[in-house]
Length: 88
Image 1: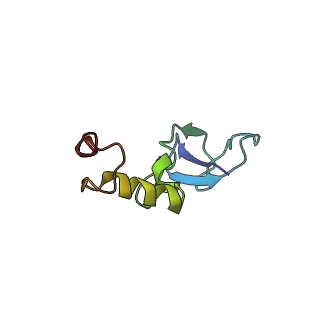
Image 2 (image 1 turned 180 degrees about the horizontal axis):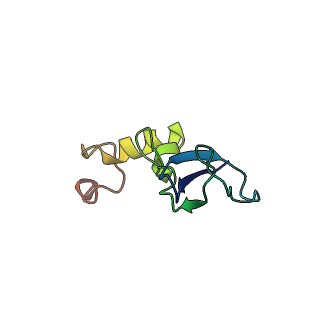
Image 3 (image 1 turned 45 degrees about the vertical axis):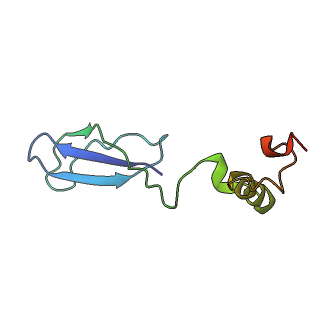
């Protein structure tokens, strides 16, 4: 449910109200009964927690293991496509 910020035009009293989007805006100040205006709110901030939100964050263990193996330097013996094995 959104939070709306109101300010009284008469006494400048500011307050926040949780309202449904379909609710009518408030009209009278709870402090003095004066006319209210609804202020434009900045909304709530989004907080991201964790290492990030990328497709690679949720890859399978097998995929990550295979990528680690592929990133290791070639020793010439275990790599069938290694240029060192082309002469053999």
